Image 1: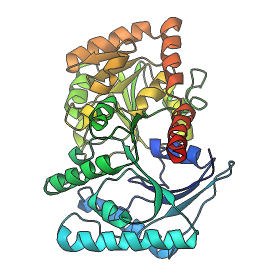
Image 2: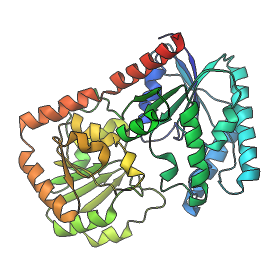
Image 3: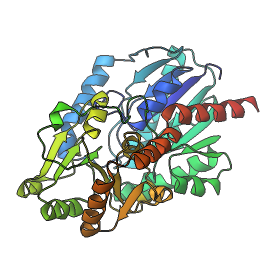
Length: 395
C-alpha cells in the first residue's frame, strides 16, 4: 500500500504503561504510513477529583510541547508524530465550551497539516464526538475512517447528560464515513445497516509476544496455586460483586489481577478476603510472563448495553498462551463457546474454573486455543485494514 499521511484522532494516551489495541494498530500502520496521532484530549468522560493529577500532567505536557513533538518508530518507512491538543475537558456548557473546543481542535489540526505539509490525509477517528466532527468538517481529506471500538455513547464513563448528543454524532459518523472498521460483530451488523462500507476488525494479539512457550514471571511465584488471573483495566465493566463472592467461596485459590485500577472504582472491601492480589499495571512486554503463571484466565464483565458490544483484547491474549478461559456471557464471545466456559454467577464460575483446571494440561485443547489466536494476529488484522483502504483509494 502506498505511503499515506494519516491524521489519527484517538481516545487513548500514546505514552502510557499499557499497550492497548490502538497502539498495535498505529505501530503497524506506521510501517507504511506517516501517522499524526492526536493524543487523548479528554472532554468526553466524566471527571472526578481523582483525575486532577492526570489533568495537571496533560497541561504540563501541552506547555512543554508548545506546538508539537514527534517520536519516530523503529523500523518501517513511516513515523508517528504525537500531538497533545488543548481543549477544556468537560461536556458541560456545550453550547459555549463545545464550540470553543471544536475551534481549538480544528486550529490545531490545520497547523499540523501546514507544519507537516500534509495533502489530502486519511482522517481516522476512534472518537465520534461533536467536537471531532466540527473540527474536521471541510478539511481536505482522501477518506474519513471511523473505527468503532465499542458502543461509544453507552460507556459508563460518559456523563448521562451528554449521551443523547454523542449518540447523534456517532450516527452522523456512521453515515458519513468512507470506511468503518468495527471491533465487534454486533457493531458490524449494526453499522452495515447504515453504511455498506463497514468491515470487521476485531481486537487481536501479538503472537510473537504471547505464546505457550513463555516462562512464568518470578513475581508470580509467591502466590499459592492454582492462580486464577485477570489482565487489563479494573474499570466499571468488571463484576466485582461476583469476584468477591467467588474469592470468599474458594479461599484455597489465588486471584491475581494485573492492571491499573480506574479512578472511579473502589476495591478496599477486598481486603476482607485474603486470597485476592492486585498487582497494578506492568509493562506490556512483561504481561505474557504473568499470564503464563495463570491456571485460568477470567473475563468477568457485567453484561450491559456497553459490554454487549465489547470484544476484549485479553481474550486473544489468553488464547495465545493456551490458557483456559472463564467468562460471563458476553455476546461477542459466544461464537467461541468451544474455547470459553460461560457463567452467570459466582457458583457457576467456581464450577467452570474447577473444570478448566482439570483440562489445563490437555495438549489438544491448548493447540485449539492457540490456533484460534493465530486467526486474531494483529499483523493479519491490520494488513486487511490496509487492503480495504487501498481498495477504496483506487476506486
